[in-house]
Length: 344
Image (cartoon, rainbow, N blue to C red; front, side, top):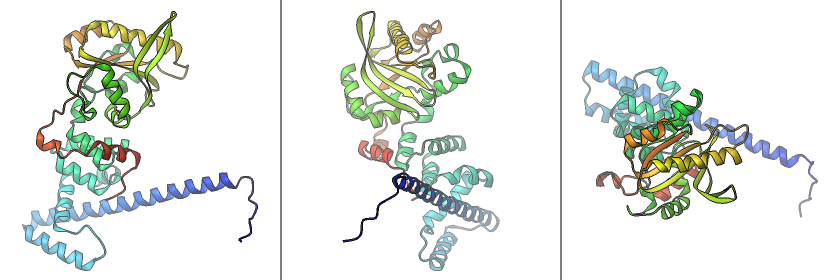
């Protein structure tokens, strides 16, 4: 039997530190390889564009180029005619070398191909590119966010944040909410009641956190608070890591009513009094309703001193049938959240 060597007392801590360093180095190496590959593809695409413009290259020349490059580099993938056309489209979509080096090269190649395929304008592509980098989205999640119109929904909830929160917090708080919220992944019908929706959300909490957006952490469901000897229960409670505050979410299976804001304001007061610490910012509330009259919601929140947002939710898939089939499954999305995508 091999001799058992006694280990120094700090060996375990040192080994853990070494593992962390090695893991970090591996990640940096992967990012560096991806960056060089993306820059190479952009340069090839730029050259193809220039020669097509100058010499009138056609598809046949690209096919010949693909054949010659694969012959010269048989062990290197990525030189198919289709991928060369993506390189050309990449250079056309982002013609500035500086932007490619500083922003685009931070995403894997097939993330960039997805942005090119699914979005038509530079503004849209830049927005989703920045969000994908910021939130470390896998390609499946990037596709889902595009298909469900995240950009059009972000910051669209009716809120009073500008009047009820400090300027340093109000803009981020507003951008953290959206309207409508897509809850079709819960598999519920339009007539589902609050308790059924809550139970389904907790059952798919990973997917619901993705729909809420970056920074939300789940605290609990039906969170008990006691005020004046009476018991009350908050539907869903979250903490926002960037805003550094609690977020109280109340679900309403019907249309928004002004009294809903009063109930939520009461919960916000209770959370700020009983749970908030000196390091936390004032709590914010989100009323998720089946429907709302925007003018009624605006009137209700106008004179409230509690930061509240009002948004609708959708329980039934609202996408066209041809887009529904292209969305990843719930299982694929939750798996993608638990492990980051590497370069394709």
